[in-house]
Length: 106
Image (cartoon, rainbow, N blue to C red; front, side, top):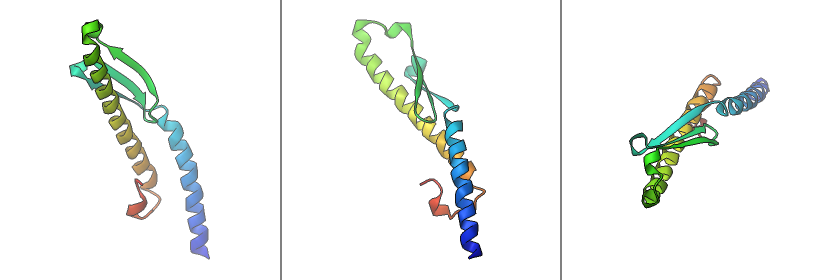
């Protein structure tokens, strides 16, 4: 019975820390870049896009397709960085709780 109570206490701690982590992720920002810096996308680790910067040289009608491709690439780069930041936060959160390795990061 003591093991069960210990597990319940750990679960409550984990839930509290998960909520805290979600709040922290909203404040972690990453920047995805493409085209050697011609396009940059800033987003939070919760995948909320906060801003986009486009080099003025791409603001020509004949560069529209290039700009569209660079935006997709920059968004993908930012998403990967945001996912990495989220995974790092999760590992720091669950690392001290003694959870089985297979449960961490799922």
